[in-house]
Amino acid sequence: MPASVLIVDDEKNILLTLQTSLQLAGYHVELAANGQVALDVVSARPVDAVLMDVKMPDMDGLTVLARVMELKPELPVIMMSGHGTIDTAVKATQLGARDFLEKPIARDRLLVALRNALKHQAAMEELRALRAELGRYDMVGSGPAMQRIFSLIQRTAPSEGRVLITGENGTGKELIARALHQHSRRKSAPFVKLNCAAVPHELIESELFGHEKGAFTGAVSVRRGKFELAHEGTLFLDEIGDMPQAMQTKLLRVLQEGELERVGGTETLKVDVRVIAATNKNLEKEIEAGRFREDLYYRVNVVQIHSPPLRERREDLPALIDTFLQEACTRNGRRPLSLSPEALSVMASYSYPGNVRELRNLVERLAILCEGPVVTGAEAQELLPRAKGTPPAASSEAVGASAMPSARPPPLPAPLIPSGAGAAGGFRPRVDRTFREQVEDAEREILQHTLAYTQDNVTEAARLLDLERGHFYKKLKALGIKRGEKDQPPAGGEG
Ligand SMILES: Nc1ncnc2c1ncn2[C@@H]1O[C@H](COP(=O)(O)OP(=O)(O)OP(=O)(O)O)[C@@H](O)[C@H]1O
Image (cartoon, rainbow, N blue to C red; front, side, top):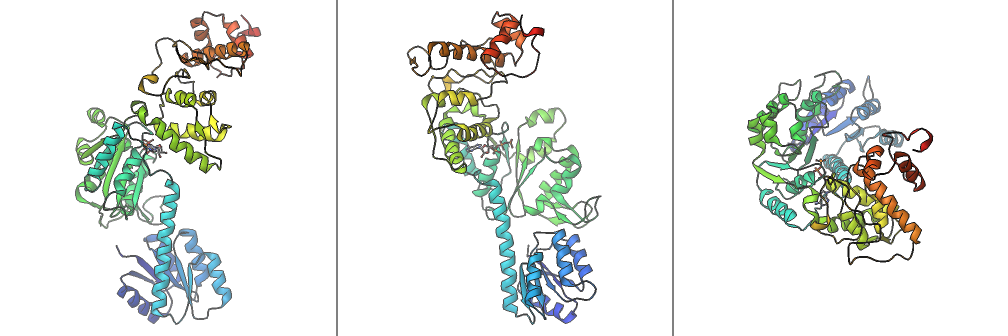
């Protein structure tokens, strides 16, 4: 689609001369003979740049410029003046003008200014997108599950086939979608994302298809939808299982015909977009339950890529931890940290219900909180969440699938191994803690472990350990264990 330029000038012959120059250079041109018309156009139709005279009757160019900046702060505006003073040029720049040209306008100078303004605009948009996504492109992992994903990406990306990516939250579905885009012939066009679960149902249509000015209350200016923005590129529909049914029907039509109308509009727009969808739901079950259209499912599910949960590809943990740790250290301006074997073992024994996203956050916390340069097992242990029924790890087992408990709690608390004491053969005497302190460490771990198992239910934890409830509370206090407020200590604090 050619870039569209709005020319604003009260002199008709200037409008026509500039129009001819720009049309010959391949631009789509709109004309406005005064400031009010210009403002109407800017709020009613998408324009990519504005070329505007300073001196106009009724509303002068600088006033119009200020209003345009309120409506569309990112829109590049080039001001023109036959009576250009430095003052006016400075004022225009302060108001947000991208360039200032003196009349009479040389064609070459005009085209260079316009090209620069549009290039700058595109670069800023790219930069914004890159900043937002910084560090989210590279996929780490060399185990069989990731190898399978890489191979599917390699084979599917160059095709035009729609892809459905399935998997729990935080498993890297968006990264897969981005990798598909980056390895496709569409890579120089935009990658646009819409999270269907995050947009209120009543707004999703205008998010996807855009809207005309006045289409509904709050539609103060025309807006392009995600489909239009993704023209010639890729549209990533995240959480497609949450798309309202009425929208599923409309989406189906766009996928079938490549055509759409903005909300409140009558013009039919043609779009060339590759759709990649993702879901954490089982869409076949959603179809059975009547919540997801079967025909839409077949449209989006030409190729399916499943991203398994992290607990099913534990072999990737060390590489992921290492990558995230180095990234986090750089980001937080500290020297590289490394994990002791005990810390790695502790990290490996957690089940990561939030998957790679949770791992990434935990590692970021390690990079901020640990003294270093080597993260100890105790520091890692301290960091892991324990309140959701996940028992804290035994600290000195080897990393590997067998060292990792499943996400579900065991039927009874697993036998505990005090910090620093491993399974048979792995025992290492601690010289940095007294005997009494090590006993307390062990007691603390038993109480925390049991509380995590009972989801902070003290009565149940005390029962499991065959302790009186009051005595249990006393121990918690003595060992400095903080807990949630599910039930209160008995009156007097003892039992
Ligand atoms: N293989 C990987 N290598 C490196 N980083 C990864 C990998 N997988 C996921 N991540 C990181 O984990 C985080 C979550 O990934 P992403 O947003 O792609 O997951 P998702 O499955 O799309 O999540 P949601 O379903 O919640 O939208 C991101 O910070 C991403 O960079």
